[in-house]
Length: 88
Image (spheres, rainbow, N blue to C red):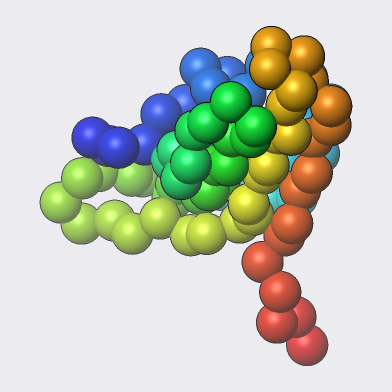
């Protein structure tokens, strides 16, 4: 988990956390975040679901969504969530 952090550590918007938490299936593990981009204008995060019995050596993470936080300096303009596509 060297580049992945718990979601509450990097995303402060409770509505975004709630939407992402509701998107995972019952029995799946915690949501983890990887920073993709960090600048004055935006922050972009990749959201992953860890398996329930996650360990660094044997388990792969499942990509769930991309979260983008648009900013105007220190002021947040909006949060955007794009879930992984390709559902049938």
